[in-house]
Length: 438
Image: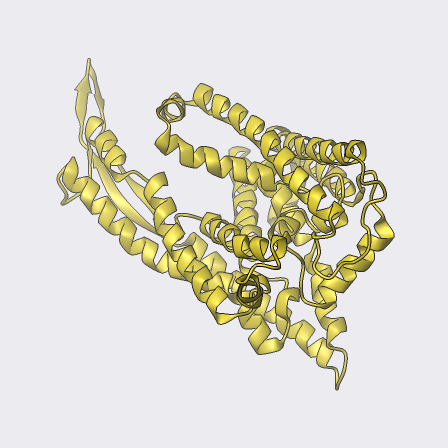
């Protein structure tokens, strides 16, 4: 490991990229603490403190997670990267449905650039919608349950429009910062920003666990160390599962093109155990926020009390069973639309490739579908169990929603960390250095 760090320091190009990335992250964190105009920070701080002490982070806890706490601080970057993530998921799903987008996806770099442009436009549209909803609920006092104080000074239309435009502009800046990291820094920009926002909350969340359980004979320190130990074990398990893959061997037949012989090589198709990543968890969490939204917007409705009791705090068995089932279902759904066995089998047949023991064409597609479905089963169960870690923490150590190593957050942190290390390692190997982890 030390040799890897020394190799990074020896490479001037890598030093510049890492320094540039760290500089962008500093700017990003400054924007995450800068409040938008017309916000009463004193009242907002009291409301947030009351909500956290009552184990409720409000309706926007997922967005607050991806904004590094900026959402409940009503900062310039309050919406964070959530609009971009949503837009990317929507465009990715629409490429299967809309023929125009599917054609662009097959055009290579030019088509990808066009889809990226559409993603930017959709991100700004979603930022306006999210900002409008967020500011409206803040003005009406519904952004945090139990908050009776005025969060904004002026409730006039001009002041509200300024707040919405400021948050939308902040989302555009966040998107630009992410693209700068991708082009001139290390790692995928938006993923690195996502990693930063989540990792920034770990120290404060850990310390809150220690402070909240200070009564008794060093109980606070015991729980503090216990949570760190559980988090490290969870990280090891996630790394093991994220690295796991099924390699399907592919043999390419030799063929003559003019006077040259092509083919005859061996390769493989890597199918990961967790082929869908963290997307199913985000989907399931978004769906389960709808009951909480209904209960919060229409408290006088007859079913709002039942929804509040079972779906708002997230510690009820009905919520967790539904959450687990949705994650498993979305795993199969997402894999089915992002991995096309028929297309892969046709491409293999076109270039003379085949799986040993399997005939080319339709039998290859059926075999790939069979293997993928068997891999998705343990992958979906693994995602579901990881996502239930906060609930298990509440039962075992009483950490509740303060447990920092939640399923979504730890999956993102570990996944982005592994991807960034792989990119650094590949750049080191291009410069004739040893790998970063060797």
